[in-house]
Image 1 (cartoon, rainbow, N blue to C red):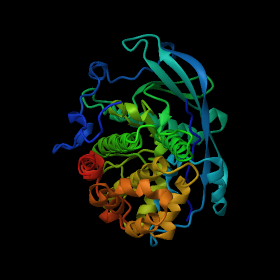
Image 2: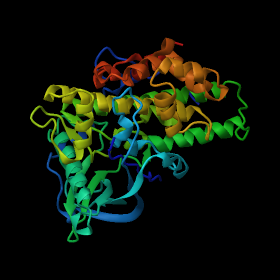
Image 3: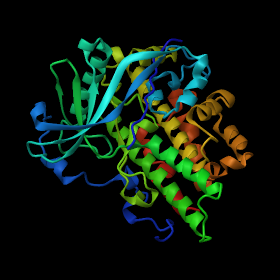
Length: 429
């Protein structure tokens, strides 16, 4: 099948045991569990209007950038149903150049869109002094018409999600404003709520794991290792909870993410000991899709999604909407798998592509068969133990989210309220 997928190069910049978690982060009978908190007071007071005058901003140093690679062919493994891996969410898997080399069996070409990032701040208005990160699209005048579509879609999506100042989601990146330069570049200004992504955190944790296992970081306290493991579990579950909270908000407002992955989740901290202060936020909404009943099936950037929906047997607007939601859930399932394995394995043992191929190609999405395989490899023992929490709650959730039949996948709110994502499993072992 023919499709477009994108991958970005990310830009980075002693307490009691966690069996007694802070009350506000424990599972709750109300939707959202530990993620239910009041948004920042300032967000409720500001106008929903975005700043569109460049004079309101001061641009600082260049942070880096990322380009796109178009994957124009993919052999699906989902029993004849095109896999999400052929969709846009691959841009968030945090692949290294070495991992990308393994995709040589696919047809890969350099895309035209290259995005630059700058730091900066707001210098006028009620948000004066707010730190910002600028995301710069080249624009049609530079021959990147696709970039214009992406910038416009990302701007419109954020503007829609922020249109009600009393209903702004803490777990979605906040857009401060946007403007176009004389050269046609599109500048989107986001509040700087952190520059580490979930992919960055996972790789840091994996590197620490390797250092610990090799003896580079000896544990003088016999309980130290167990304590650090609990910190890691808590951090990862809260990260996943925040990401799913953002996705629930999007789905409840008729918007798909369509590029969900570890690099599409930004963190305000990457330190596990600061886990109770962690606030994950979804970003990269350039490929977001409007699934309002009057819009389902339309959109230049969503052509691939609707083709896959038709191939899966979704013909009516209601069926296509259900497919789109399930498509996001599949991407979120891959995110759960990534975060359950990579931070708990030594660097070099497992990567995003290997894990995805293991689940999709080797075990054809039979998650429990994959567990038996992983159980036999001591190097994956901590990842297996993590998913085993709550009598296998993690495996249960993965099997549901990665169900080959899109009609049987749970909705985002059901995932958010699952005992694994709420953190309830941390109290049950």
